[in-house]
Image 1 (spheres, rainbow, N blue to C red):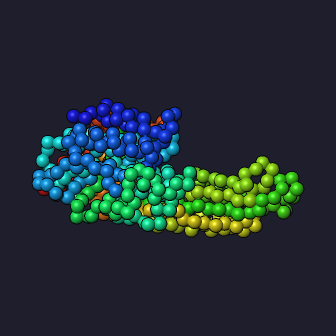
Image 2 (image 1 turned 120 degrees about the vertical axis):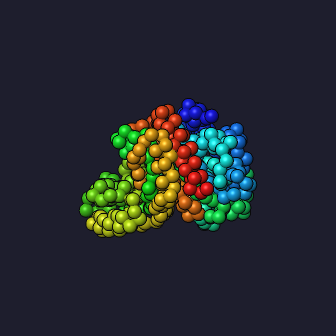
Length: 407
Ligand code: HGY
Ligand code: MN
Ligand code: MN
């Protein structure tokens, strides 16, 4: 039986597949992605699963239920990372799913059991999140082929270099009638379980995100020769915008983050003429998030007008919030209760997950594990071995609860 120790060893093993030997960075359709898929496929086979890589680079494994060809309960998460990542965001969910499949190897189930390691959740390489799970959910957009990574390689070329045929991406689609549901185990990526001294929690819903690229446009001029009344400094305006975004979000129940700022021309003796900034906006409900954007947009316009600047806005990403299906929330709660925790906490997830895309084709449920200091998207990301042990028991029991509901 795969233990928590082995699960953590497998997460550590996947750390080897990185584009930078000093830190963990593994992006979509990279050589490291290929190695991670191959190793994951090997573990899936050892767990008794039949494996395949789909037309979008996602790694799958499957065992049949009581009879061949039944709809599948899918367990999974993602194998790609942010730059300089921790070892658990995504990967823990994949290796826990494999461990659960292995534990249930000889247990008759009224559905097929599948495990998936999604190819792209973070969107680190092409700036577009959930490419792997959106391909599976049938949400592929032909415009995405022209997306470029920082070296100028298009998504189309990256598919070909990885050995995938872009014309066949539609073959990755799974139909609702092939699926019973999708379950994902994931570190919480926040501090709430740790603060409550709870190892596990169940997810009620996943926040929808909107992301924007905002250009603040002023005028580049000589840093010495331009008196203040003549200046239209894009960076000072953008700085005011960044501070206003934080203030407005703090006054609401939303989370707004400016994670990237690019200043042009970026010279010490030139007044900045243009600043491009990113905005990531999340809330428990899409209505709150959309209202926050309206408020931020009005403030952006007002700050720019006050400084004789201009703003241009492009929305780069939108994902609707997704609710976990009540019957799968019940199954996750039953799974946690079976480990001796009578009243598990229900949490909404401010972080995005592959489950959001899967919600377009099937019911979803999620199990959260406490993470050390609530830290994620950072190499200090950590989980307790005891929490993984109880998480494995709960995840296994969740699958059995789904089996009882389906029987
Ligand atoms: O950004 C997110 O919420 C996810 O971790 N990719
Ligand atoms: Mn992440
Ligand atoms: Mn993740």
